[in-house]
Image (tube, rainbow, N blue to C red; front, side, top):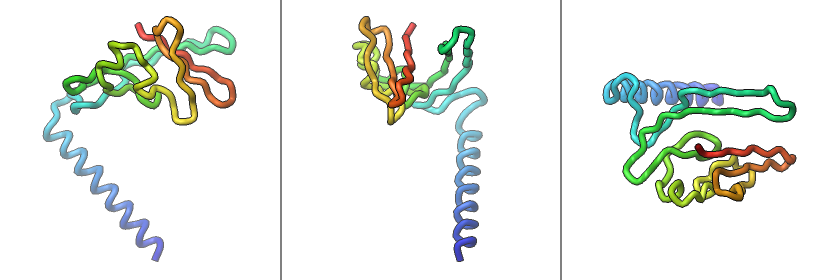
Length: 125
């Protein structure tokens, strides 16, 4: 009986993905994003310094009114504009669930500290 349930679940997932693809093809033009979504355009990594990796990414977002491009759960996302204007970066929950968020002293970005001691620093330019 279990394989039948798995087959039905897979069929339902395939149908849902097909409907989503049909929706996107019908309502969105090529290269256009759905409202409230973001996509990563470029991602560059520099590991030339020991124990340090510098990563720069560029994202494209189609945010709703009152929102602006930001970061949620370490991914580009649309966030409330007041968070960016007030530079209260940790309010947009930029770190993963098991990480702690701290503002940089000059509010130019934030730090995500993992339980093992690894730190990811993000600055906004």
